[in-house]
Length: 117
Image (tube, rainbow, N blue to C red):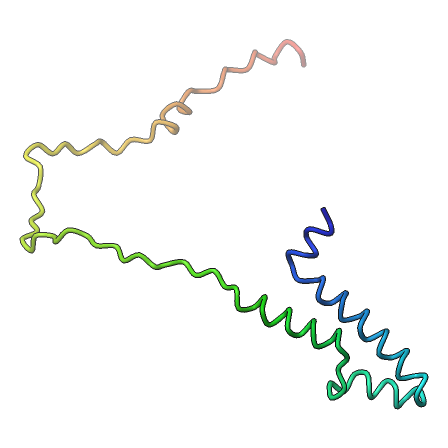
């Protein structure tokens, strides 16, 4: 599953490029000093055959773009004579708070406390 995700996201190009740079660095180290080998490997002026193949593969992969054809939505014409009509029977609802009405009950009366004193 991880390999499929990495391939779909394009991470395989990074892995291949790392391998190519490692091979180039090893080859350049045998011909000169470490700093010269690092400069020659990463300057981009001296690509190896694997680097050229990776660049060509990236370029060909970028050309494959999926384009969705845009569809234009057409709506039927609306009449220009728009009229709002008031209903014949209009009933206004009373302004009552049913929750507050249900809370109007009086609390129960406490028992007489004169006998407990």
